[in-house]
Image (cartoon, rainbow over all chains, first blue to last red; front, top):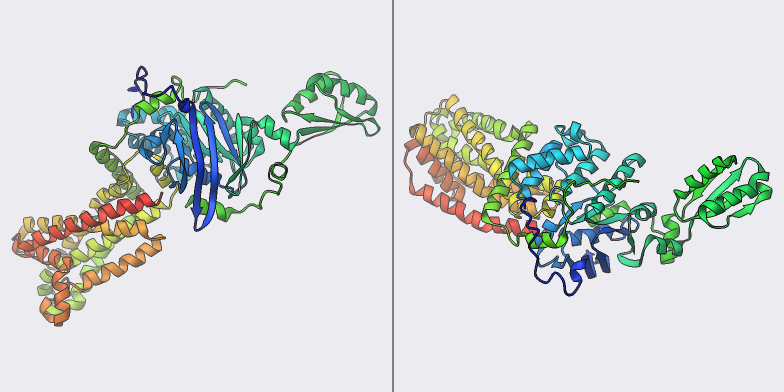
Amino acid sequence: MSITSMDTTRRPSGRSGTGGAELAVHAEGLVKSFGGQRAVDGIDLEIRTGGVFGVLGPNGAGKTTTLRMLATLLRIDAGRAEIFGVDVARQPHVIRQLVGVTGQYASVDENLTARENLWLFGRLHGIRSARAKKLAVELLDRFGLGDAADKTIAKFSGGMRRRLDLAASLITTPPLIFLDEPTTGLDPHTRGQMWDTIRGLVADGCTVLLTTQYLDEADQLADQIAVIDHGRKVAEGTPEELKAAVGDTSLQLVLAEPEQTGAAGDVIRRVLGLDPILSPERSRLQAPLKQADLAAEVLVALRDAGIRVASVSVDQPSLDEAFLTLTGHPAEPQDDESTKEERR
Amino acid sequence: MSVTSVLGEQRVRPADRVAAARRRISPREVVSQTMTMAWRALKKMRRNPEQFFDVTLQPILFTAMFAYIFGGAIAGDVRSYLPLMIPGILAQTVLTTCMATGTQLREDMEKGVFDRFKSLPMARIAPLAGPMVADLVRYAIAATLTFGMGIAVGYRPDGGALGVLGAILLAIISGWSLAWAFTWVGTIARSAQAVQGISMMIMFPLTFLSNAFVPLTSLPGWLQAFVRVNPVSHMVTAARDLANKGTISAEVGWTLLACLVVVAVFAPLSVRSYRRHL
């Protein structure tokens, strides 16, 4: 499909009415079994158009399998799913034009250069050759791969592969983008870049469905989070709601001079708008944080007030703690084999 | 923090996209996607020249080996064995070449990029048919080298240049058709090694239980019956008639019919099995 030929005046019939078209994804009772074992065991999802929906869970929880069913990469054993009102099982060809998929493992061609990869995928989307070439150059520049355009992927770093992979998913600017653990194994800097890109996509009007093992990542990006464990949805809500269930991040401070404890307490009260727990005898303060990055603001305010800090730490509720709270059992040990099985 | 647009275009409107989405794939798209996949396979071949080992070394080695080992025993001398043997080697080479089609497809399918192919709105037959179009180059190389090597050791085809060209063309068509069977094996087997194993078991009886290397009359009666219906025998006989006599015999027709049957059976089977991998 050529993007320029998009007819913006055309209105699909039945767009308004049921309100179902407002949902990017509507899935009911999704089931997938591998050899008698239920990898996905009756998952319901309602994902509103726009924004980021996070699917959080440990390895082998069924996140990837769910995503692959929605992306027409796996047959849906039971249940049904619609994307923008289109049935996934009945009209896979239409679904494939609406969804861009970026997997856990970069799905680009090792034997081709970055430029050739994007051209190939553009052509397979039905874009004319000259336009596919132009799009490839634009995307490579936008993803900071312009200099590596003519290198074969075998020479790419992990971060570069991920970026190219995402670029390949965006050739037709799909309205729904699936990102399967997009930052697993990336260094913090590259992870930050990926997050910025995801926010940019949402600003463009895309809906993003993101799976992640990191509570922090879901917290940073997602408007709504579903927690999945053993193929079932165990919790769903906004990050705030889930965190409330799990418990807040807390800021721990030790001051250089104990007599400043009271003044420091005042500063924290002003910045965070809540009362810290003071232990003046050990020059220690503790305060819950709504977001981990508020810690920086507290530190800046303390410095401005001339209060010296001897040590600082931010304790976050870990995924393990989240799981313990939400499921009543700790997250299973990392099991890479089950993830591999999920892929097949 | 400022949020910068990634797509740099107008806002994405899902409802318009749903309306604009094509409901099915047109035959033109199938052809275009197949040619795009063929382009990919050719790029891959050019960057991994070791993929050409089988199509270059085998015709050269086998022609020399078979001519000097069996020539005296079967036809009295090497020179008079060549008109019998070269079309046989041609068939064997082409069969081995299309065996590699299945193995390579299987290897390819295990790579991450096939995930993307599956997620694209493209014809399911294109990832299978594309490499097969590119493989036409391999058949052409294999067939040409077989004749070239034969001529180097003293083969003088009486059918002339046109006859030889006809035999090469027939070999290419046969190879391409038969490759569908191996492609099917490629889509059902668990691993590339398994494809290799299964393909060997198909290939050896087909080539050796034919008239490729020995005259039909030298075989026991019950074996003759099988050899007579073996499509490879028809192909070999047709190629012999073309290269040695310059005549288009009825065997050409039988060979083409066999090709048609193989494609008609295995192309749909392959696509179905590839789909099931989803």
